[in-house]
Image 1 (cartoon, rainbow, N blue to C red):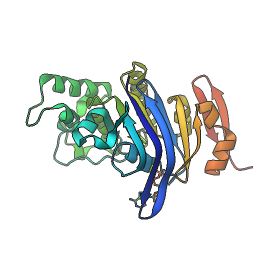
Image 2 (cartoon, rainbow, N blue to C red):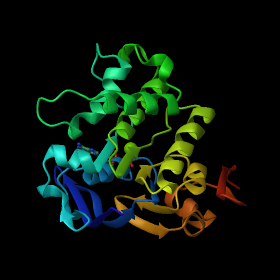
Image 3 (cartoon, rainbow, N blue to C red):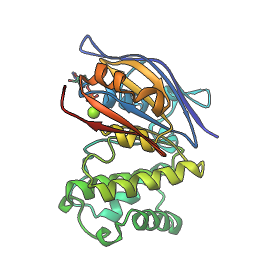
Image 4 (tube, helix red, strand yellow):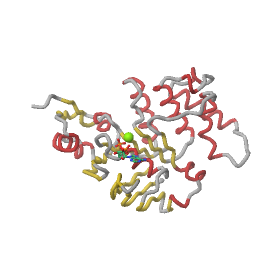
Length: 257
Ligand code: ADP
Ligand code: MG
């Protein structure tokens, strides 16, 4: 089992504290979701966990300080998918997804048949085989988002960080991606940390939720503990109804009374 533990993560940019004293822990088999209003600091926190910001606090994988890892080592442990992934132009979808294997190759080595098989397998799982030879810059936003997730899965890192992974996807593809992540984490292959805009999805898939506001943790707990009408109204200024469903709370907006 692999665990990522972050303690008192604080990110300050240009003298402004964007993330303040956030602590969390996630192990393979678990899915933690970060929610919060626009500008709460979700993406900045995720980038800090991915080693892409310079936070204060501690960040460890199985008690090893992540900041001492080389970029390559870090990629073997953590895969990160930005909300709006930028793909290098002129590259085919297959080549782009295969880049996920880079961290596993020894210097100057070529990809093996296994690397190719993994790329093909993940492309098939995400219903992307038909795009394999297409140039990445001809993809729609939703296709590009799924291809970026495929690339992260091909990386086969035990920890995967996804910034609003379904923001460009329709309801069917959202469920396909979420079901695949859920299956992989249930098989104990990965630990997932995702930010999520949609509170119902946050309530249905992940097993814990951390709600952020102004960079600080409002509450961290199960979906039923976090997604209450009171927390949502206080943190988002939104009027909602929370309906309990067998897979977790469903959050429905309603007109302010
Ligand atoms: P979220 O993902 O929750 O919407 P972000 O983490 O993107 O929030 O941003 C949190 C706050 O930090 C916002 O007010 C944003 O403008 C600010 N911010 C993020 N990155 C930078 C940066 N590089 N320079 C200055 N401010 C930033
Ligand atoms: Mg964001």
